[in-house]
Image 1 (cartoon, rainbow, N blue to C red):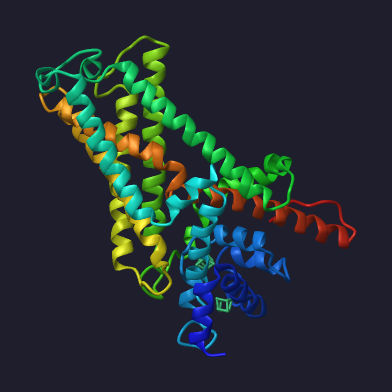
Image 2: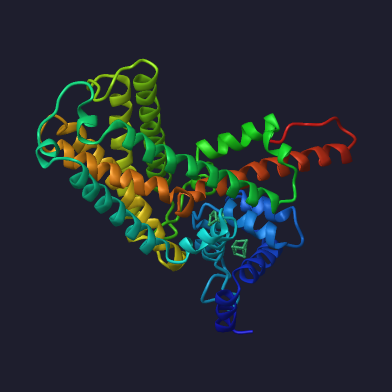
Length: 389
Ligand code: SF4
Ligand code: SF4
């Protein structure tokens, strides 16, 4: 069979192509030290659709196995594991989405997330101009409750609460769908030892380190920059989330209304997080621009850029709002910032954000499988149960 036929097959059936790649890799095993995918692959001789979905989400797209593969194109085998898995991952986002009709959102994800963002920003500005006097919008407001003089507290809370709670529900249901495909009981998720190991791998982004030297974004040269920019993005996001949570407690429990002083806890958390959420997305966008396109999935690129731009715009407008909050620009900046935040909340379960959910589920399953393999090995040798290495 020629390489052209193999590529055609890949476009026809994503799981067939991923299965073919895994069967070749399982015979070769040259890349077994690169990431969790290869040890997980070696535990199997056959690959069900559920196994492939799991392996695809275990892949962090470091591209190490592509750059070192002697069977990569132009070899007739045409093995391209990162690309095959990237395309299958996108399919799993649609397959496990909840509610299912929303799976269509992944078809043209970049376009739809961009359109949603534009609609939300325009919608919030138009609604603000309809419900509020222009003099109030463009006046400078200072002191506790200044933001609520422009956009009422109840309106802000209702939209943020409804969209965020729906996003959480949708993510929980999607996680459930993904886990069910593993045919493992839900109680396996909360085994303390394996959960602790998985959490370590998730929060350190261990496998963005490839085989220990980093990713091969541009060429066969290793680099840790993708891991570092991902850390800026992830921890920047978490700090911004912490800032919002602390502000909610200040407001609802302590009765202290925003805006808060610059050196208050929510503003400090938000500022540091916001700076991280500028550095991270800018770095990740830059890496995407200079990356070798061969191991990338064209279908995923639009959604990747759309989400990174949305995160960047949220942080930039949030920082601008902080700097200009005592000026007449505060009202319109608040509307623009909240428009981006609203788009983000709506898009969370139907954008690249879900990669964190499925990758976490895959890492939990991997920790379980390693533990069980370790216990089976110990039992075969007649030893007491041991911890996985
Ligand atoms: S990616 Fe290539 S080199 Fe690596 S295990 Fe698979 S076939 Fe072997
Ligand atoms: S691209 Fe990286 S993470 Fe994905 S399978 Fe290859 S080595 Fe593993």
